[in-house]
Picture (cartoon, rainbow, N blue to C red):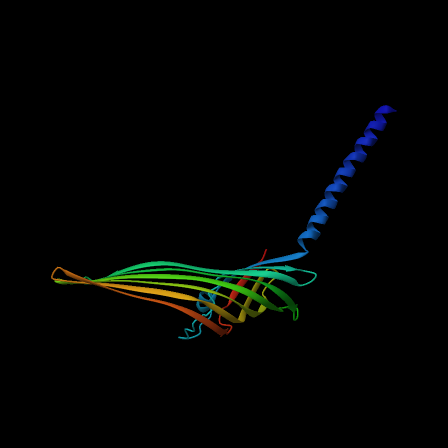
Length: 234
């Protein structure tokens, strides 16, 4: 009798653990479905390679190359972030003139959004972003013509902050792949500093001239939808 009771209790415990595991997996699955996570990348160069637009070379005025979007599936509310970073150092030398260019630019935005499904394929989003831009460039030019040597060092630093609305349109290619674009109207304020140091050497005699500027700036600009994003739901 005791042996049968022990076997019965063991089976009951086994089924209870199995049922608990199933319930936990179902709850976990339901929790995952409560939100949508989308990662996007700017894909204008890829689209140009796939589709032939002739010699059209329209400038893309959207610096946010990578984007991340979080959306609550029930309320359709969420937030998104975008970032763009450029680090470029080039050197040129034609024998008489050496030129060294250095660019270090960072663009960042963060905001809230409201998603509006239009039909089975198209979805619109309405965003409000805050922005930050940190731009730095340096150029060194050295011209050597025998008895005369000219060295020019220029530095430009720009800081911008702002906010503004953005509206996006996304097309569902498949269950997890989307293509979209956006238009924004951002207001930015900031500061631009630049300095140019020129040193001329002729027959052993040197003269240095330094020119500096420090200017505040304001921008209120409409960015039309020229950027094309490819996005994946994860």
